[in-house]
Every structure is written in C-alpha cells, then in structure tokens.
Amino acid sequence: MSRHGGRPRVNLVVASPTGLCFGVRRAIGQLEDSLTRYGTVYSLGSPIHNPQEVDRLVALGLKLVESASRVPKGEVAFVRAHGVARSEFDELRRRAGVVVDGTCPFVSTAQERAESLSKDGYQVVVLGDSNHPEVKGILGYIEGDSMVVSSEDDIDSSARHERLGILSQTTQRDTTLASVVSKLVLLASEIKVYNTICRATIERQESIRRLAKAVDGIVVIGGKNSANTKKLVEIAESLGVSTLWIEHSDELDWGWTKGKASIGVAAGGSTPDWLIKDLTGKIQRL
Image (tube, rainbow, N blue to C red):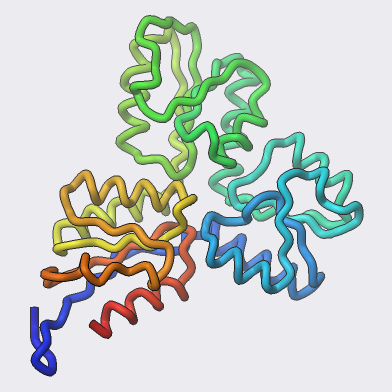
C-alpha cells in the first residue's frame, strides 16, 4: 500500500475480462436502436438482469410486461436476452406489429439442443435454476419428459433411466456441469451431453479465480437478480477471499475496504460499462 498525501493508497485491480458479455451487449444495442426508431418498445420481462440499466432504458421508452398477452396489438415487442418459450414467441408474432429478437445466440443454441434431444427420444436434464427465465424458455422447447437440477445433490441416485440428454443454463459453473454429468452417467444406459455454458461465462469465472489470488478483497458489481453475477460471488467466496456484492457504487461499504492494500473489481455479464466506471472511480478516489 503506497501513500499519497499522507494517506494509504489502495491498489485497484479489475478482472479481465469482466462486464457485459456479447449477448447482453447485443441485446442492449438492439433495444437502443428500436427505441430510437419506434419510441416505445414492450419487453417480455426484464430484457437483462441489471436494474440500473433497465431503469435507463425505461426512461428512453421501454415498457415491461409479464406475458405476450399484455403486449398491445400492433406494437413493437422485444424478446429478452434470456429468451422465451416457443409458445410465447409465437403469440408475440401474432400480436405485435414488429418483434425484435434479443435472445442471446448462446441461449438460442441451448433451446435448439433441448428441442433436438427431446425429438430424439431423450429425457432432457437441464442444469440450472428452475425459476430463471432462461431455463423456463429452454423447457418451452422440450416436447417430452424433462427435469431441472441445480447440482448433483438434486439427482435421485436410486432412479434408473434409459436415455438421458443433458445440457446447461448458459451461466452455470463448468465444474457443476461436470459433477452432474459424472453422477448421471452411472444412472443411465445412454447419455448425450451438450455443454451449453457460454464461453463468456467461463472466461469471467476464470478471471475471478485469477483475481482472487492477487487481491485482499473483491467487489463484485451486478444485479442481485443476475445468475452469472451470483456465480462470480460464489466462486470468490469459495476461494476464501473477502467478497462484497453490490449493484452500484453508492452501496460500497467503506468499512469493508479498511485494511485492504489491494482491492479487485469484477462484474457480471449484464453489468454495463458505466456502472463499472462509477465504481472504479470511487475506489480510486480513496
């Protein structure tokens, strides 16, 4: 810790890569273009999991609705980055004058994999959070039997299966997918696995592992409703580094920074650049 003006100076380290992933950046760009062109756009659910960025978009004319039936006929509809079930997408096409598809391409791939597995006669196992909109959307592409597990602990070791098809919510931990597959391979006559965790998720998880070795504490900035941000926090905590999870810089606890010579900053894949800059600027002014 160096000194400046008689006060200790904190060394700031920002994870690399961190912040907006390709799919979310793409969705935000599509929304901004649509709002500029049409003025008002109806999003089926929160377009991304970052409340501050959503508030910014709402101020530009974005309106949030909870189902396709709530989109006024003939208006512009936006499909969130997490995707929606096929039935909802079809209803949007029937109701809306324009449908802008902001589904992350990695999520679209997971939906396609789930559909193909079910059509080929596999019972589909989805690793993820059953309440997450991405998982609900993926399930909407499965025609046969399916189940959602959040870890290997959710798997019934006494159950036996003929054919299992396995895929993952795009923001899950790769180590969790590996453990689920390892357990299921002993319970089925045949399994087929698709690793649908997106590369951006894996890269951000690897970056926070590196960061944890180099700092005294990590501030993770991102929406409390963001699955990928939650995974970053879990990884940092599992490595024993002091971890603080905030949504914006005003939530920074100065008491938490006390005694830390180096502080790391990491951000979820749905955290916009302006929020990261606000945070790093505040820490640099320590």
